Length: 84
Image (cartoon, rainbow, N blue to C red; front, top):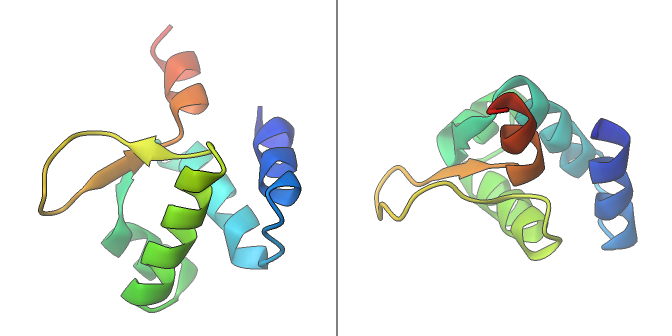
């Protein structure tokens, strides 16, 4: 699964190493916030938002819920495996 998600990232044209690191993080932490990403990758919240948005557009991540504050994200393929 990890290889497949990283391949999707590369096919989407995302070359940033942090995009690949975010895939690794999503494997370790299936549900997370922008703040979690910012802290884990040691990037600004704005950069974390951009990375997450790029991976949502690449169909690697999606919103976990509809909350407007503290939005949570997940990699649905990973979550589906964990919930089996």
